[in-house]
Image (cartoon, rainbow, N blue to C red; front, side, top):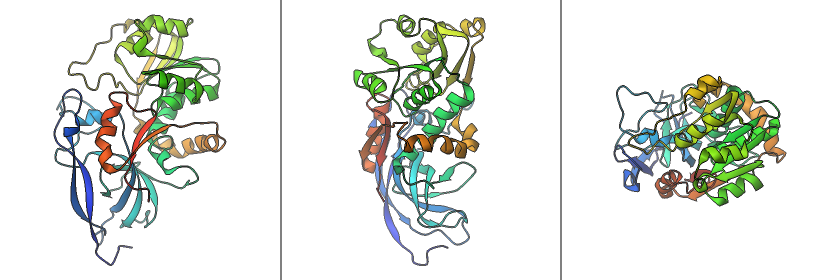
Length: 351
């Protein structure tokens, strides 16, 4: 039922200024204020939401690049002069859609702004039914990153007890979960990260068997041989570049690589090449890229799997939370310089 009383309020937004080459700058994202009517027009099936938490994710850098007509991408480019688009946790203010009513909570695709009008399509948004866990988890552990870790590790890599697992960018939103999923299966798991603080986190909080700071290694091939003297069964790829090169040499026969992301390449004008591709042939390695959206039909199965572990305290999740919409640009840009510890998000409003 639509509201009967009109109400116009200010709506602070983070606007995308223009396409980016190299590392993005805060000037590429500008905070501005407009107004919005807190009611949905008659006969509209849209939903008006108040955004509570907004997620900062590495894939968003891809959307900042100038669109190339012949290139392919998992995500569409941002529109210049409009709010950037990401994932968030929101509360319904008004609805013309039969499946949503005022007060409902949901997570999915929204603008970086205080209020968004959303159009629903399959798997673009999910209603939140479980509120005995932090709502912010739906930007991470119970949202897209959690589903990414689950799909990439279980559906693509088909892990078996006793196998060896390597996770790059292991303290991030996805990597910290892949490592814990690997331990639940009974695998030996090692992660790489970019600071001693993150390495300690992997070993003491997330239960990785070992971890190392890739920035302190002169030769990544030698480093991987140190931790995996008999080779790697499963590699969860988050960074690409020199790390992927070294991993390919160290994979076992019939190893599996789930390609989730390549954050080391996103800000390069000329992406690095990969030089050990023949090992894919010689060692019969399965290398599969994937988009989490391919697996959203399994979301309820994922919740059934992960919620009991959360409630039993068997899965730990670390968030890096900043306050206020204005903190969004610096929070997002920080992940490309490794400044975040855990899942990066920011609070727009707590209710």
